[in-house]
Length: 278
Image (cartoon, rainbow, N blue to C red; front, side, top):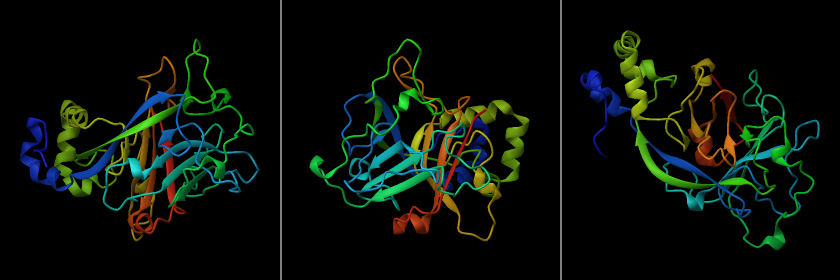
């Protein structure tokens, strides 16, 4: 591991920060109209075998694909699947399917996992005409500029890079792991706080630490339950906004969390879904 970068004002606390360093997989999103059904993507159409019921809300409204991760394309990350396709669906309502009173209730969102997948399109659902065009929806984190006419096949292809970083200041365990004296230093020197956070910018990721715009939702969980780890983060991403972009409210971030034991069992029935903006 390369030497951890820290602002000069935090050098005296280096051992504490280095003890929190975690590996994660950085995700880069690239607009495309030519994604296959099984490749990793944000938006677009999902991998679904014929006969599989497309995810819906309890009222019968179709969810839409937020993210699909094909782990055969992802660098190895301890505790995460080595193969298979993991999917995240959300509802097209004004909260993007998030229930802030019950963030684990998979009614407005759904997480599906296919441990093995078929590359023969004859065995897959290929006609998604029953779905409203994602780019025509009023409530979605995916956006297009007014002068761009979106294509029904517009989505983001994903590429992945192995990275590592120390704990983020918004992580609910920051005070516990780093110490109140460091927290006081950040309060007394806002520039130091900014300098630290600028060294480890936000972005899309698998694993690692979250970049919560508001409070980390895990802060409100009972202390006696198994901790939830970051599964997936999807950030606001407007660098390709001349075509399509991702905008969680006012420059917000979306996070999914899962217990380590559930992740290792490939059980995605108990996942926290949260997004917030500034």
